[in-house]
Length: 295
Image (cartoon, rainbow, N blue to C red; front, side, top):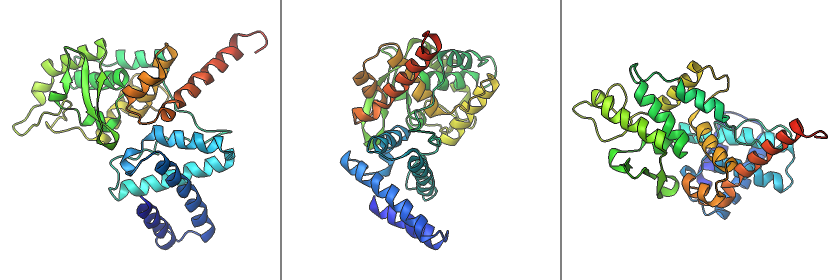
């Protein structure tokens, strides 16, 4: 992993012509990240997702890094992971959803339960690809899958009768994830009433197919989620990882055990999952301020 950091620093020095001071600043941020991932036993950049980067930033804050320094670190992470994605070192850019830090570590964005309901209920299943798109949204929210996990789901991985999907996540680790009743119904409807019309002679067993009968790309799924949210009148920018964050946050708010959420999300370290306790605490503080007479 050090090789990619060195290559990136060479790139910003020679091809981008950035100053020595800026190079040293980037090196400091990425060295801290390298130390953190090594302590976690991570050996491949593909094992890092947005959740892990958020956990890293939280850890940096706990170590005393100022809000200004955290803002700079977020910028460094964004340009580094954008570089790795451009070089095909990673399958997807985990730093893309990170937002600038304002006075502290950025906590994961979420949709509230009312907006999730509005999003799901807005999809017209009678129109072309409506069943597919609703199934995608339902599975993201019901199971908290990563984008790559949803795109990689195959028919043989689904057990709708038992309500599980088998996915392969970070570090090539396989796990069983529950699929809720409404998501099962949406997937079943899509499989029986729309997927057959998308199948072409060379179609494989991918669950979610493009209009041409091939595997849906991550970029296309991002577009689907964004377009469906806009059509539902949701002003907030919606992307697949936002639905994953919403899945975990709503489970926690409704009393689910953090260890169970960890297993469903496929986090190797409970510290990564603990970021959702900060989200929940943030909500509690907001509620206290709103309703307590001396809040």
